[in-house]
Every structure is written in C-alpha cells, then in structure tokens.
Length: 118
Image 1 (cartoon, rainbow, N blue to C red):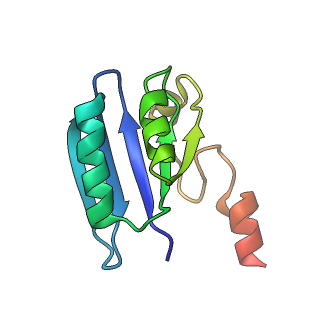
Image 2: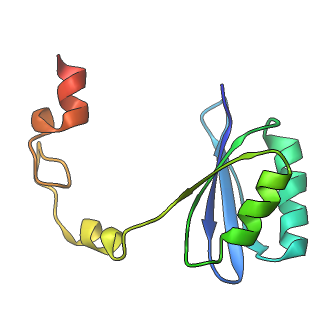
C-alpha cells in the first residue's frame, strides 16, 4: 500500500497526517514552516512513511513552496493542489438533504455513485 501524507500548511506552521494500516491516523501538528520544521518533518517521514511516499498539500499562496521543495529533494512524490477560494465555506453553508450530495444531485445521479451502482 502506498503511503500518503497530507499536509495542511499556513504561513508560519504546518500539520501532517497519514493513515496507518490499522485504520488510525498518525498526526503531528504545529511544525514551524522553516528549516527546523522541515527537519522534524523529515525525521517523522523516516519513522512513519515509506521512501517515495506521496506528499499531498494544498497550494496555499506561496507558503507551501519551500516545504514542497524540501520533500521533493528528499525523493518524496509531491502533489500540490490549488483550492478554490471560499469553496470550503460554501460547502459548509449548504445543507445536504437526505439522498443528495453537496452539489444537490441525487446520490444515484452523482458520477462516482452512478458508476458504482451499475
């Protein structure tokens, strides 16, 4: 199983998490977004992730760039995803009716669920 490490990054700090084989999450929070935090992150990766693990982070402004470079130099695979401004807020604000997904589609009409129902 490929290990995936998720990173929530901000200007001054970042949090990391990975799903373990037993179904529980291994997390570490409040790592500083600087060389000292990157060093701690590297040690954590050696202990809890396999070489070449996927590192997935949201591309938040420019705050992710140094950590992405560090992870890439450490031979991890890095995926940076750009979020849509306000998307989380919109999803939280919209109530979900029974039998519908967050876009208001009936669950059977959702592309992913439709494929699974065939």
